[in-house]
Image (tube, rainbow, N blue to C red; front, side, top):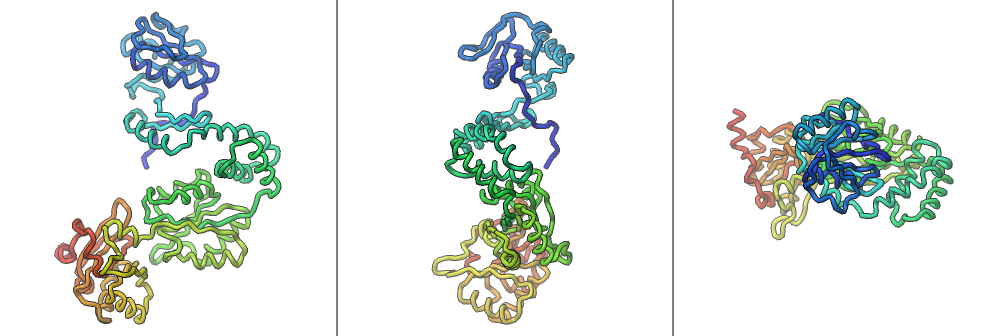
Length: 457
């Protein structure tokens, strides 16, 4: 994520003037934005060419003078001649921010694309680099937001003084406003006051732990529920495989604690994680336990759930896209396919004994698709043991690394080739799909095992 050259903020203009120098279409466009504020909007130009009728603006058909900036909050320069240059210089002498239309390098501030749900506003800015893109993003956000969201924002503002009297500062107030914003049907002061009385009676409230699936790592594969709970969390405990961009989708001032386990290095043991979850919940915290993939698929959620139950801690589980399903989607592989594969087996080969491998080989031989979560270090060994238990060397195999992410890669071949170590696939979380259904996938861009063997040599 790149650093910003501007600091986003909302600038007070109430009771002041917004001055626009210029009388053409560019001035009109800025005037249409400015009249949505409570400021007085003044248009100054010897020639008024655009049609400003219908807008509450003051038109001054004359040259600009420095006195026009008295009590001005902002200046827009939509005249690129000498008059515009002099107006910008005069404004900067008075420390008034200047926007020179279509001249990003000459601007003190930029005009964002605005979603208006007054008093709630959302501004989308590209720092003047890509205004068309900013407008397209604004349109997408606009479509997501209810038209009456402004009424809810006004209601929350109305409740602020009562909340300040009845609830202690900090988490209790934040939780009330979160409940007010997310509880369906609260649109009246009476209902908001009833909710406040309920929160005042319960005090800080008990803590809760949310076991949240982060999916394979792409931000747009995170569920809406996961996003909401991350925004409500006081503390975020995240695994090593969860990328920073997903973690940063949490509430800005939430505490972030990495508790991940990388191969050969555990910053926290599972027992320490369990103890930390319980302690934070006992402190009344809302804890987001952010796990890669789905928390219930090789996420050790069972151990954490057992510890939370024993301690009497409330918890919820938010599913995520497991890596095996992301691998199937990336390669268009129908892991269950009529007359080919009647089922789908998720398994991890790490620590698997010979009896388990024999069972998997029998399932795959019967047509089931195997999805094995494993690293490249044991892939050839596991493939060899599956062959020893009767799977044919010609059994199709596909490997997806970093499934669901921008940097994903795929490889295809046979079980015999994999057992012969005829592959040098990329480092990263790998899913190995084994079975006849793999042939039905789209592996056209995947590297063949034999090619990898030549390159590795």
